[in-house]
Image (cartoon, rainbow, N blue to C red; front, side, top):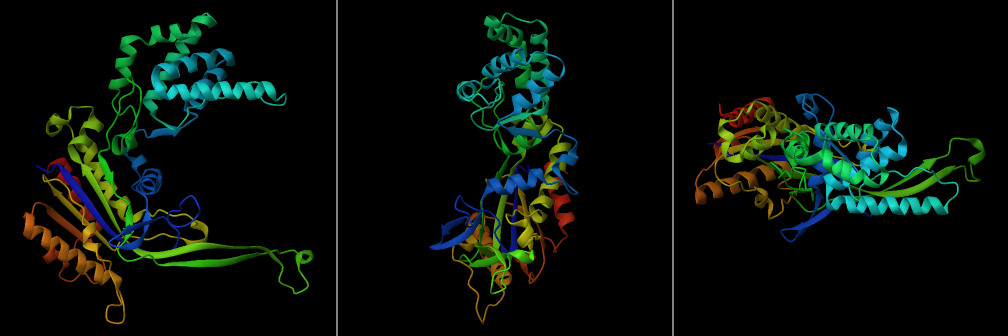
Length: 413
C-alpha cells in the first residue's frame, strides 16, 4: 500500500531574488546555527498552480479555484446586472447570499460595504455603487460560483420585498441547497483539493491539504550581494554637465544557492478530495485523476521556478536532483541531511557533489536505524555516481520515468 509519495529536490539558482519579504529582501531562515536563504511554500504553490506551459495543472481538464476578495461582485453581481437585474437588487441578494454561505467571513464583508457606503456619502465625487468584497481572500470553485449565481438569479426573478431579501435567500437555499454545495465534487476547485481550503462556513466544504509543501532553503549558509544599479535617461536634455545622464539610482539584494525542496502527497486524502469519497474508501475509488495530478506535480516541482525580479535576473532553473519515495510509513523530510551546512572550498569546490554526499549519508543512516521503509526512484545530473546504490534506487532515470513511476504508485500499478 502506497499511502504517501515524497518528492525531494535539489535546485541551484545563481544571481536571483526568488522570494522577497515585506522589506524587499530575500526571505531567510536559521537552520543548523546558520542563516539560510528561503523560498516560502506559499510562493512555490502559487507558481506551480498558476503555471501555464506544457504539463500545467489546468491541462487536466478540471476547474481551478477562484481566489479573490471580489468573487461575489465580479462573478455574481456583474453577470446579474448584465442580464438586466437592477444593480441594487443584485447587490442586496448577493450580500444576503454571502452571509448565508460564508458565515463569519461575511461579517467583514458587510463591515467593508458599510464603510464604503459611508465614504461615498462623504465624497460627492465617489461612485454611487458600492463593491461587494470579503474581508480576506476567499477560495471558491467554479462549480460553487455557478451554483450561487443561479441561486441568486432565481431569487432576483421573484423580486422579493427589500425588507425580506435575507429571508428569501435563506428559504430558497434551504437544506437541499446547503447539501448540494457541500457535496459538489471538486466544488472548491482542483488546487483546493490539492492545497486545502479553510472556511468558517458550515455550508461550504472545508478541505485539508493533500499536498504538504515545505519551505525550500539553501543547503549552505546564505550567499548574498547588494546589486547597485542605475537607469540612464536617453534624451539629450537630461544629460548633466558630467555627461552621466542618470535618471535613477538604486540597489537590490541578489542571492545564489543550492536549495533543498520537499513535497509530500497524502494519496488517500488526495483521492478523497478529488473523487468525493470517504478517505477510508480511497483504495476502491477511481485513482486515474490523482495519478495524473501526481505525475504532473513531479515535473512542475522539478522545472517551474519561483522568482521575483524575473525581468532582471531570469531565475529559471531545473532541479539537479529529483528523488521520489513511495510507501506506507509516515513521511519524513531529508532536510536534516543539511543540518550541518554544506561547506565548499579549495578541496570541495562543488556544492552539488557535497550535497549529494550529505543526502546519501543521511538516507543511509535513516535506513539503517528505521529500516528501508520506502521504494525510491532517482533522477539526477552532475556527480551522481554511486548515489542510486546508496539510496537503494534503480539506476539513474529520467525525470519522465520518475514521474511515470510516481503515477503508477498512486494508481496502484
